[in-house]
Length: 419
Image (tube, rainbow, N blue to C red; front, side, top):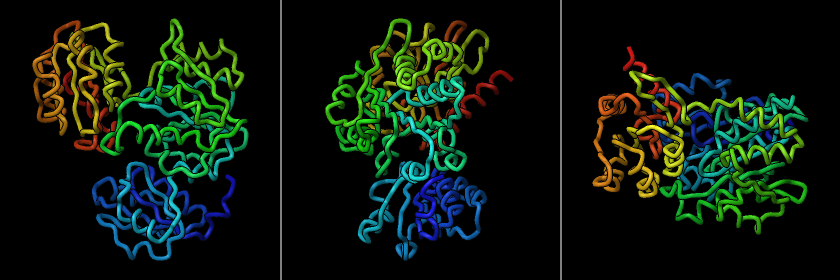
């Protein structure tokens, strides 16, 4: 790692004690920082993370934020998803304490070449594919960020000449400072996280931070078919290149081929990588076929656009399970394809009232008390030749810690149906 001396002895506060916060705290402790962690939640996850700290010298405050806990702090590392009006951030701003995010922390230490990928939909698939491609090319690559392990958990293993295929969310990009990937990519932009942002332009502004520090020797890869993305080129200093959907390929695959071209990877090797790819967990993941009914786990879908994409790929009638925590999505975007492909919609979670108001009268809609109830209802509504698609269109936090836990729960419940 580089720049390690900067953190030695520095008094650092980590805000948020989920996966990202835990990883940041452990890394900073290893670097010799004096570390504190604060989280407003005191729950099984944060208590479990207490056991995963690598040092007893890390001080942790759970279930509250106290002003005195900031005493003497020189740097704040904020976890993605922490509200902008969280008390420690406001107090830190008053005290003029610098604030960075987990991505920025890892990037300052990273000796490897970073390929950073963002967008509303498809970034997990593209990030995974880019990692597979570089691995097939014979290079050492770390696929991390908003998928897999946090960047801070992997950075200590990296060396000069390695690559990082990094998925970055808008939340993570809010807290960068000097972050400067060699290649940045924006796949698409559509309504998302409007529970956090003041309109679409605010959301786009967060996304475009991915290229704000890039220079003429760096690359910015944009989706030419998405007008909002294409128009960002006027704001960039990096070399801007475009990908377009090609015949026989989906947009994600075309994006990966553009990365291969920039890196000088043979197109035949890239095409073989695409052909061998079986998908990522929780994204259109085939769970099982039960009495002629296919069960598909698309828990990664937290937007209406992702669900539209999922339904477009299906060739069978669908019983769709959706719902969760509201995030400002426009559910009417799904209406047209739902009328053509969805036999029944089963709703769960906090957003079920709003989704019901959009779809009622257009397709058959029912409600479920839990994910277990939804899976059972969907199976009872299905017949051989149908598929049960779990594509929530919402965040998971009303019922689950994250989309991974939600997807695993769905797969377990399907397994119980079989048994």
